[in-house]
Length: 199
Image (cartoon, rainbow, N blue to C red):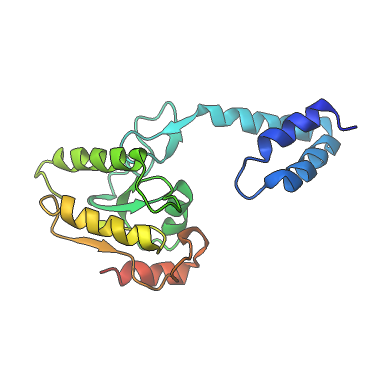
């Protein structure tokens, strides 16, 4: 009853967070009704995503031809202050208030299983090497800017233990963020206060 092209679309797009099979089905039929030019533009925009890759320094998204992402390559940023976040969209959200002028490390989303995955551990180790590569071998501050949950608390303790010889300040966002909330959906004023009240 449903054409194979629609079924194939649904099968792939249903895996996107926030979509699911029902929304993917609606999206498939919506796109199929678009005029040829609009649909071609949409397809081209998806293809262009192939030109992206991860920054080797912070793991934020960047164009393949760039050496580093725009944040890491910006000489006006303070490279001695590093905020650890879970995902790309957290960086976009934290940048909106224009309160933070340091750099970042994307750790990867923390699972609900309450453990650090191997990928998280690898990025933490890479951050250590990054800091040790600084001229003075240490930095001013590491800010843990992850969503407020139990695993975030555990990660804070790990950072305090493993990075105490690399920085004198390990802080986390102030509790202006509700427990269980997500940085990505916080308003600018809440984020400003969370950054200012970090402890």
